[in-house]
Image (cartoon, rainbow, N blue to C red; front, side, top):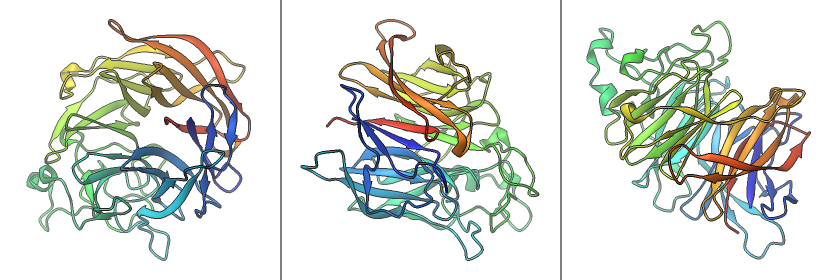
Length: 359
């Protein structure tokens, strides 16, 4: 089964579509049940800990939700368990901690999860509860590395949004309650566009991936991937620059896949990943269309070595798109994508993330 999220909002698709990957048939447009989704802007999805976690980037919610698969249902159905982490909204709808307009979530398998947030431009660390149904943003900065950067702090000391693990190069952003200490790029600070407080954030941190103790983060405005040690937050450096800003990440068969513009890039991954090991090359160009496609989310079926790729036309709630599938050969060198097939053409909204799940 393939799950798909969309841009959403007041006039977009506010639920998850589920497709039968064998036939391409749409199984349901409402895979998520009993959740508050009226104006949801659903983004990243992760299947872990026997639950499905779905990021909701809607500004009135700004949370990650937890769902559990319903057995015996005729179509893929996931029952709402509750809010996993968030929101951090004040009465003014300003963000009080690092959770703000979240985009993606990842788990480290050691009791923590990591959430990228577009409006605070921060990757937050949260402590996962023993039952995996909730997580807690802890006070202060969660990166030992950032806490040791006394050289960048003002006389009064550093100030970070609660839960900060990877910080922003700009500490004063629209709709953020506190003025955080800006962290230079050389120390792992994430870039943001525009770098002012007088308007809304346009481009900032995007997707996340975790591999062998390393957190990989899409820094879209800087056109690169930043690497951090999960042990203590140590900044490990930046990847070579890509031609356009990266938005989505996927790891498959010891390779890192990066969506950027109309290209899907690939690099082999060392164990653990290092900056020196990253060297990107394009392995897929979005199919030609009257209105050009951008490459969105990517997911893999390891049993059939099939890649499912979200293709985006236009922006926001007025956008459209499609889901394509490819056979992927990774026998030697860079992967080869073949057997291009249109799994679905979507006219109602822009597809964002895709997630393959075994039924």
